[in-house]
Image (cartoon, rainbow, N blue to C red; front, side):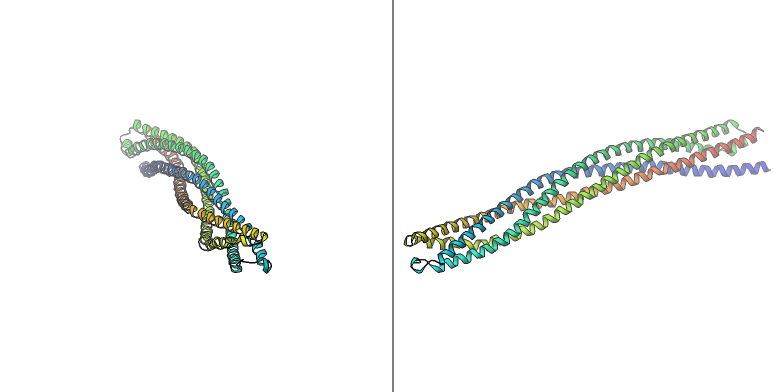
Length: 408
């Protein structure tokens, strides 16, 4: 009676083990499949990031060239403004001298014209001072942008190497996942056969079929050994998965750093657009007022034949300076107008750069998330196979106990 009760208890334990074995084997198999899926998704996201990064680097190179060109044009405008300032200073000296000539030498010299020229000169001088101050900031900001452009491009080259390294690692991880699927599938199929046989144990005991019981014991031992191999392999694969996870985290940090650099450059670009607009208004509204000076200066020169030689020479020089100043004002206006398209091109490149950076970072975010999930799924087969080692050994021990009872 005690023997029968003991056998029933063993049957219950065996059924519990078989259910646990089945659940564990199923989870191990499912985790292997999910691990492969997450790895494939990581590769897809990484390839998307790679494509976005290549487009971004291309835009950065074009944008860098355009930034240098734009900075050079503002440099040119700034230099013209400096020459204009020198010109106006010389005009101021000449006008002051002409206003101070003695009455006898002032014949036919229109004082109102000189005063108007001086007013226009002073107004343009103030506008030049304002414009030069803004232009200096534009050029300085442009230099900072060019410096950041170079830093971003170099960082992108480093990142490209990191992407290639991670891509290689993820493909290796994918092969590992496929190998794990094969192993877990084999383990699952063997486990299903063992579970089926465990359920027949009561009838085998009744029929005293020791050969069937020994076969079950051998299956359990073999299953435990297979689970031991899976456990060892899973630990090795987890170490590799954690390495992939670490490299992915580093690459993600690199992408965030590059995004911050792009954001910093975009802030400078936005500031420069405001400054460029300010200069455009100064040139279009205030600089153009000076162009009327040439007609006034020419009226003075029409009568230079009636002045004495010293006054005539001063009028001659003043007219030449005024004409040169008007030419420079028009040159500034033309350069400023020509930059309209350049600024528009730069704006489009900048928008594309920011958009591609965000797109690339988003891809790295997804890659990191998928690699983290892949790593987590790699952990489960270790616990699951450890349980199956224990379960296989328990089944072998219990079946051996039943065999001992039958053979004694």
